Length: 127
Image (cartoon, rainbow, N blue to C red; front, side, top):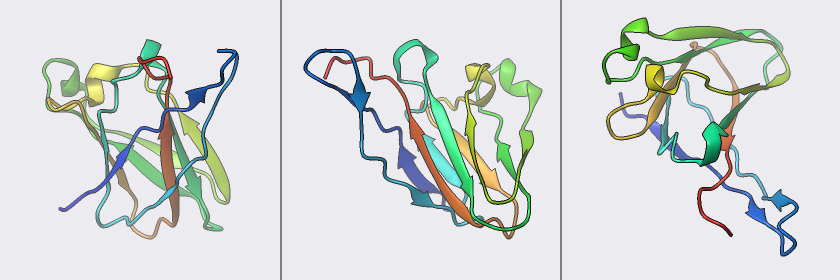
């Protein structure tokens, strides 16, 4: 499977260091490809938020794939429902369950899923 690759988007802090903002770029999901979120956990304070928008009028499923690191990856994949016509945000609590050795994370979608995905987090660098 050739996966579509997306990157975490990091909002930039304004000059007062009070608010960070970004114009979000959404990736259209091709279920047959799945998504690789590169450098998924290279962010500040585990602040990663994965946003999945289901544009269909039917519910679907998303699967967070087990990583290739031992031992937490042994917990396996995690499949969750994505309600119809909704935007869902997922915050990964057990990073090591899904993290691959290269720092990426893989996400699969049920056949027939239509929608978009993006991810945001706090940057470890000051912008």
